[in-house]
Length: 391
Image 1 (cartoon, rainbow, N blue to C red):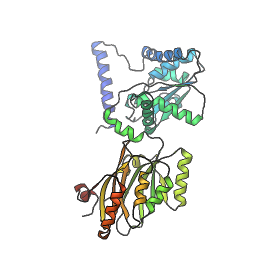
Image 2 (cartoon, helix red, strand yellow):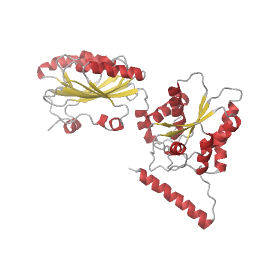
Image 3 (cartoon, rainbow, N blue to C red):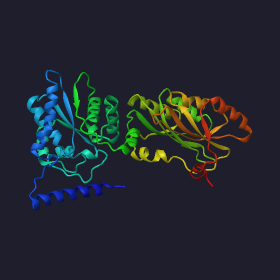
Image 4 (tube, helix red, strand yellow):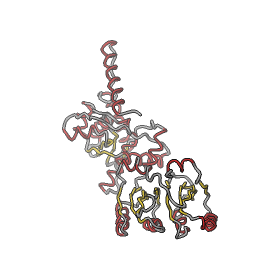
């Protein structure tokens, strides 16, 4: 694991070595962003945009900001040629050095920077870039990691190109600006400035890219039929995750992680209100980083459940598949474990455990046959015995 401090140490070492080479060997240091000629070179992006928009409406240009070279250069050109066009800088909220500096009216150095958008992760913006941006930039926006991931997905859906996190900052800024201002019939340009994507990051980006997904923690009664009632409150919305483990003998409440795709903030609020009206303790964890990154994957534990049978199922990935499964359950069979996550495939992979007495074996076999979902019995699986069953 690499820490932020290790990356910052490497950056400091590189800067020190560059300074040594200038002093000892007489080399010329070309700063990556805080140099007038570098700024001017990046400003040609603004020139290209204005040439393409000659005689056409253009209301704002959104520019990713790390050290500020591109933002300063674009602002310098655009404000000279078409001063009525807004120039808006966009930073990751955990690496917002220009935002902090402009707000303070002087250069600010951040103690730490987040490294998800590592192409724009700078602790201290340039002196010259700050001077130009302080005079010419209209506004700064900061965007969250989830907003960046959603922007990467938007870029891919539109162009079939995969942007790196820093390269997608401007798209995230456009979306945030347009939603907050509730604008229509405006022309915006987002500068997508990099595609140096680490392949191993794609899993995380895909997981966090659905801006419509709401993650809830819901407490429901530990009784047969409670799951179906919960799903009924969410229908016809798409359920994207469902994670639950029986708390053990004598438990009267089930603690569930569930996520679904809401049509918007009002739709999300209506679902939460309906669940609370049913007497279900409901928490919105959509903005809870611990829940999204860790706790949702750790729900449950090792318990001994009477008559428990564990199966892996493949559900067709379409609306209503989960409801069909729950509707088909015998009223006396309790669900003691359930885990599902939508990964974008043609089938949904589900792990489910049901409490089925031996006397109900024939009826349960009939249920499995009529369900017509592919399944594998996993009662003897070593992972089940080690992590989900109490010894």
